[in-house]
Each structure stands twice: as C-alpha cells, then as structure tokens.
Image (cartoon, rainbow, N blue to C red):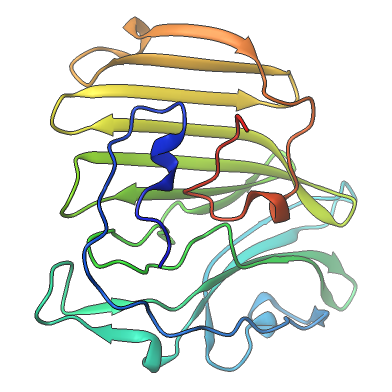
Length: 242
C-alpha cells in the first residue's frame, strides 16, 4: 500500500496521516499507448477513458499539441467499501498522463506516465486528481494539479502543482508549487520553486492572514535543472529538496 503521507518528511508543515486498515487494491496493468492516433480519444485503450485533456503548442511549431489524462475503468478495481469510511465504493483504477504532438494526420505520442498521479489506495484519502482544473497547457508548458486530503485520520491537506516543458522526449519539471494547511491549528506553508529562474520561496503563515503577510524566505532552487517526470514518481510523495 502506498504510504499514507510519506511527504510528511518534507520541509512542509503537513501532519502525518496514519494508514487505516484496508486491503491493498488489486494490481493494475498499465498498457503501452499507441504511438499515434487521429484524436486524443484514439490513445485510450479498451477499458480506459479520457478524463481530461488540454490543447496548446508545446514544441514551438505553431500547431496545437495535446496533454491528456486517461483513467482506467476496470470494474474489478472498484472496491466495495460499504462498511468503511470514504464512500460506498473506492475506485482504485490508475491514471495515465500523456502528451502528444500534432501531426498532419492527428497526433504522435511523445510522453506517457502512470506514476505522477497516484492511485487512490486508501479510503481515508480522497482522490488526488480532479478533471476540473487538474490539467492545463499555457505558455508552452503542461501543468498538472493534484491534492492530498484526509477525510479521516489527520488534519493536513495539500494542493500541489507541477509545471513541465517538453524536452528531449520527456517532460522536464520547470515549476513546483505546494501549499499545506493544518486544519486544526490553521498553520499554512506555501513553497514555490522556479527552476528556470533558479529561485525558491518558502512562506509560512496562518489561514486568518493575508498571503502577503506570510513570513517568506527566499533561497536558491534545489537544483539547476528540474527532474524529468520519470524521476519524480508519486506526485504526492515527491520531495523536490532531495
């Protein structure tokens, strides 16, 4: 079972959420997506659906490229949870983030990743991804937003966003933003890393303060170049300072 909140070891002020006894979800196979398709929907294998998609030029050729999130729809991975917390059913189906470049006949797959958006594998932790605002393309970059919220077992909640640029056949991290809130104490911590400028800010305050009144410390980014998406792994557990 994925650690309930391994990110608590980061520099952020997030509370540890203890795991609640629950069987590990069944294993899920990740298919290899087609190398090309006439539409974004054409990249979805049987048993998968397009949950979110965004359009924009990612390689500078003036054509609208695509980013998309596929969600598995295997009924065997929807777990009966009528006697537990977090809903009557828990959908543990995985997701795939894909990036495809526009061609004359449709799209060519450039990147596929099935680890950044974690599976829901604990009933007390809400789904990390929402199609509403979870994926976008702007200024030649792909942005993926995920969250961490415990509906039981802890007070911490987090909103995390990753900004990537396509480089060398992969997605390279150029921006990382995370805000952590303790719902019991009201403490807030906001961390922002811009790998392009080489700067990182760490702001601390309270939910009853304006963000401009938070105490902010600026320092160098933890690396000159952000990691490739394959090196990040689980987007909730990733620690950019290591």
